[in-house]
Length: 199
Image 1 (cartoon, rainbow, N blue to C red):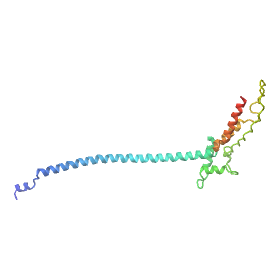
Image 2 (cartoon, rainbow, N blue to C red):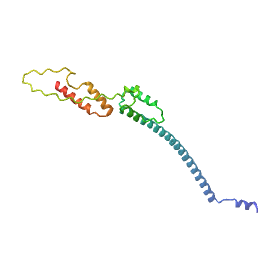
Image 3 (cartoon, helix red, strand yellow):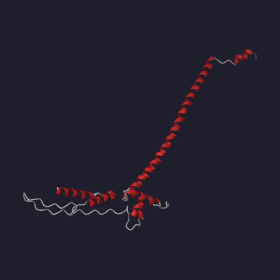
Image 4 (spheres, rainbow, N blue to C red):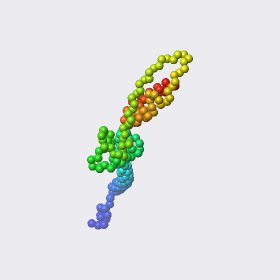
């Protein structure tokens, strides 16, 4: 073989050369596109990890808020409405060993049972609400006054069989702690009626 024949064998037709160059350029473009897409996907994966972390933090915060509300509800249900009483109850509850410790609501319910051994620091806050007085009997109706007759003497406030502020307060405390507002409503209506009669 001579040099002319070897050169002829290594010659590539232009159409084939053009196809290879076009294919190579297409692959370059594909590679650049894939690298851009890969960068975008990495960024999205980073954001997804950040969102997953944020969701976990929100779930933890929600769990704490739920536990706090459950404690608050248990304390209010037991009649502990003052912040001091609630702090004392939480402190005494926390002193119990964790192993076998009942839920706060169950512990407070046990303390409100008849004959329960209530810790001394909590006794003042767990005193049962003063029983609301039974609605007073309707005062006897007097005969209508004759025209021109002077009005009957009014009894001084706070005397007689009227509803007292202490009775209304006790009924309000009972309503707040138990959710039973019937006594409070009855005493309030009776008090309004007494004030109307006096006027």
